[in-house]
Image 1 (cartoon, rainbow, N blue to C red):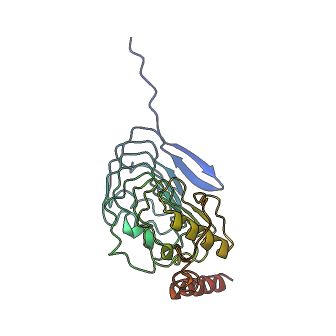
Image 2: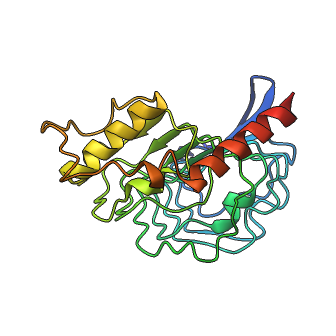
Length: 254
């Protein structure tokens, strides 16, 4: 006789009073459309989803946390994430993406974005509308084959950036001027020049931030060889604009 294997299904539960549906490692090839539409935490990680479509999340507009890591996602149709106006965190790490869906940056509540371990070789931000609407606080672009930090415009609430394991050969210190609230940046296993390393360490110290994850700069800083261009960082119009935006946001929150 034949023993039928147990059919694995998505499981329902609650986490911090939020409705969670866990569809982890079910060999799914697309986003299931028969789930409870009021789902707030949706885990679709470790599946075989290759493409996200405009219809993928139209039924699930209450999603606050969305896990899509370790799939085979190669493409995302324009408009896929637009319905997710309550989304606070998305994990797209370990997929086959070559760019970041720009609409993510316009989601009004998105605080945490994980898109590490994707080869973002086709990343083009020229069409990105700035300043972005997403109040990003955490951004992970580790291991994405980036030559430089992505220019997302002013990020007044961003306090942690992981850009480790990228060949940041075109890194410019003024790319940090957009991040006036930065407290932690991880640049380990990047190819920062000795000067770039010194500049980042100095910049973080000026902000009172942590240089813990910056490559160790062994040589003493020589400002003749490696200037500290404060006019392009903490004394720049960009940095001042970032601070003003942050102060305005904090005032509105009271």
